Image (cartoon, rainbow, N blue to C red; front, side, top):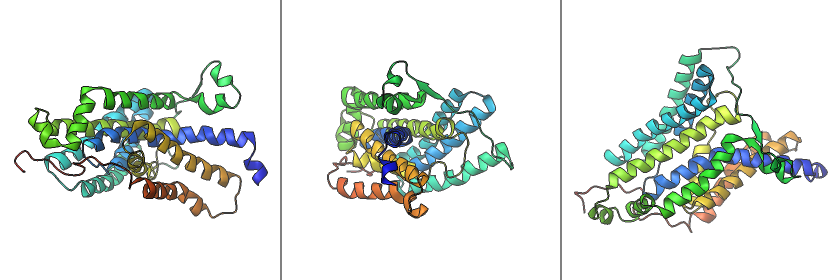
Length: 314
């Protein structure tokens, strides 16, 4: 068994899968950097991704366009996160309860929408998902080429979001306003910054990213929709933000860590490792818990984290 694991082919396949599996975790995590830096904890990312997944798949299937499917997932993600923003910012609801409620609602609504659109079929509908794009010359490099340069287009675009997110959060006025609102909303308000406006914008951006990640699961990773298509990735994305201490590059590495755990358990099962299947499936989530235990104590949360803001209260 060990000689099968230590082969070059196994390691290349493992690392290439790590990048693919990290993508639907990294993208919503990057979106949650905007949201959580303003002080909003959106635990509804799981449901947000699920709604994006069903919208993306249904649109791609009915229109025949994968890009329209991606756009639909992003739009639905924005709409769904808008509800969460209204609950947490305008209504000042408990953010943990609101997020969990949105996830429960999304689970039922996504299944209902899928049933209405496709009905009950003996074989689930499927699409031809985004195909791998081999970058000329680079994809032919031994070892490195198959790992880094033989993925579909959405994977490449997702990793470009890392420097883009860093630039927006660290080098723009909007990023500075996000920090100000998260650290001291009253001081930001006194300087003419709309606290609710910045928080709404940040939650909607987080929803845009989560909707895109959900659509990725059905139109770029799988080629169909199931109710378990997200399988906790939204919760892992939220934990990655804390693990990464609210930094974009660290979020990428955190997503790659959990992507590696998912890829490893799949490869070990394929090799027939004599470990219960249920234990292997637990591996990514165990790593999430362990990572949070060691990282949460060092994370510097925004001062106004999960605290609703009202101009009339002091």
